[in-house]
Figure 1 (cartoon, one colour):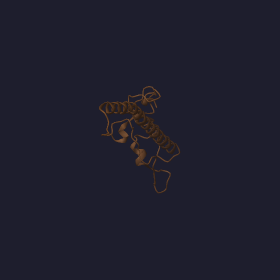
Figure 2: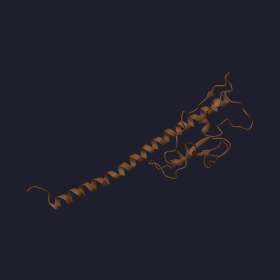
Figure 3: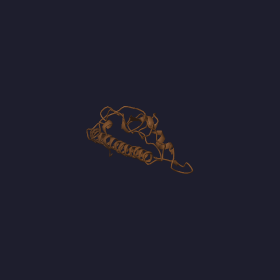
Figure 4: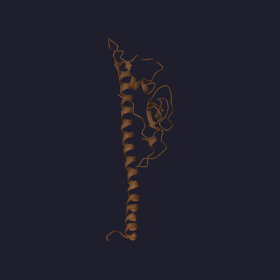
Length: 153
């Protein structure tokens, strides 16, 4: 009769358990790295859209008001678009196809609500909401693999 002894089975299971405990942390790092790449991509997309909105405002594609900075009043307007004041038939200008969400935020939040907002009047060290959106940041309190908090990316 051929088969495994109890000792051989226990040793095999111990080796498999050891391998599994070594692979689990690597899997966590891979998942975190993917989320970090999504965060970088999302920050770049939204910041580019904010800059494009400001450029359109400065070049006369939107009606200027004395009390406005030229930055969007909210993130949703980047996706919804605005009427082009320079167009004879009021075509709309869109700045982003779809507003991405913060990958580290609660999935139940709307994409626009998943980001921290900084207005033009606030400083970079003490970002605060205001009448416009000058910049965005992650509201996650975690640090990245590089040791820098996500809120500072």
